[in-house]
Image 1 (spheres, helix red, strand yellow):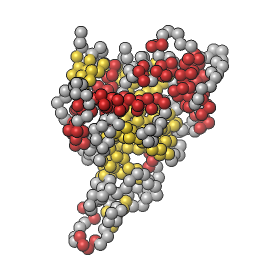
Image 2 (cartoon, rainbow, N blue to C red):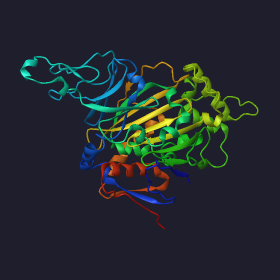
Image 3 (cartoon, helix red, strand yellow):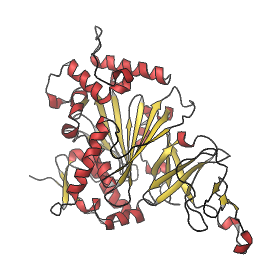
Image 4 (cartoon, one colour):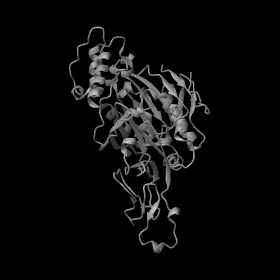
Length: 441
């Protein structure tokens, strides 16, 4: 059974999730328009959300638009190099000011009637101004949003009050300090519309129980059973070991089986020459297959970015920490890279936007910013084998959640990160929770 270490922040408490218990979560939260409306009212306008990376807004004049359902926030790097955020709306007639990213911007000008603001949010121009009478520029600045940074990730919150980003993240940054996230640089951003509620997407990245079901190719290269978990009030983490077989395969799993599974599921981490089936390298005397894989990872990173991970032993090279940040982001921190997976609300409860950031490790925190490549992925496109398997399940899950006989989910204590986030959602929405946990004989 997966170990759970429940670590609340100093001023909070966590409702325990007993080992061997069943937690029942009402199913209507995934399908109900009323529930989605409650989230639109109380969650998205107030919670801290991952918007982009520092690489998206590294230079003065860089602008990045973050969307969550109807909400839109502009993250702006001012001419003074300060990072700011504003609600993406013209104060004249409510038009959206910008769509998508921009570089080299000196002002934020509405394309409708050409009102303009500087990059600090101050109104600077109103065409045909005298028709408005005695309006004051100071009264019509852009509506500010809060912005914060952890590692290379930029967070925004539309709320003017509430917990700071540091308070919101609880103990996660301290827990992740060994991953040295500030050395990461964003390489690729992807986005795709998926046919499921955003919480279905989040749930899928909050437990390893499903690996035996849809990721069987991973079982020979990932220990899905011995993955200790830690919980905070809102967030959770799973500490995972790769390059080793799952105990589900029995006591004996030959190196060749592990190698083939590694190549099939993540061989590209060692370079393009390992992205497809290839012979297993010779294992030097006194070493293991895991040692060989670890050195191939180090060598590829040195070639690609110049970063040196010689100080990490084999276990650390093949380990990953999977952080689940409330409400909608998963951060997979590996030795040489980070995957950020965010699920944002779509146009209705049965739709979401799946956004990913891929970051690679560079030699130091002072490495120059990158220019991330933006890759929109159509519904029929590919995000890679493992993610494709996750996405393929979303439609069938969402359809199942609509069946009238399913009133609640029955979730195990092993899925404690999922439970923690649903409890946190109820608390953030300020409702009396209908989630119940019991040990049933």
